[in-house]
Length: 154
Image 1 (cartoon, rainbow, N blue to C red):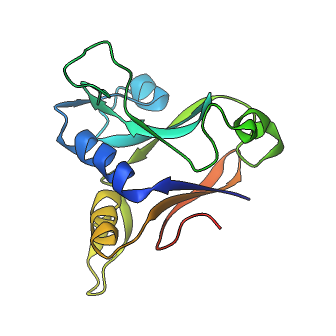
Image 2 (cartoon, rainbow, N blue to C red; image 1 turned 90 degrees about the horizontal axis):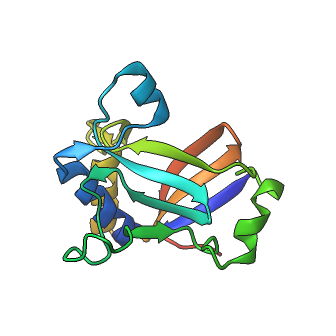
């Protein structure tokens, strides 16, 4: 298993953008099936491993410059410059490039009083409670789980 750690406050900024966006980029499957994306973070593996907003228009590093790059949050130790990002094929992530949608309105957990929380709601609650990281535990190339953590990478 490979665990990816993403800075929760930075990821929450991407998620809030995606949730508020007037349109959303579709995953390959959504496009093929003619389904509208309800809002998502996009988990990408190419030159590094990172999350970005699936909202359209995209979240730019410089909102005043339509040609600036899109805002991304790299997994700790997985930037384009990190050697580990070039050895993905030796990890549970695998060597193929991909983009996976993490839908913000999918049920993530239950609150203490039994209410269902979406991924976006759970991230908001965790941020207020001082959690520091969104985790993606990659079990193999087809299976992963999402978690929230009070601590960062060890």
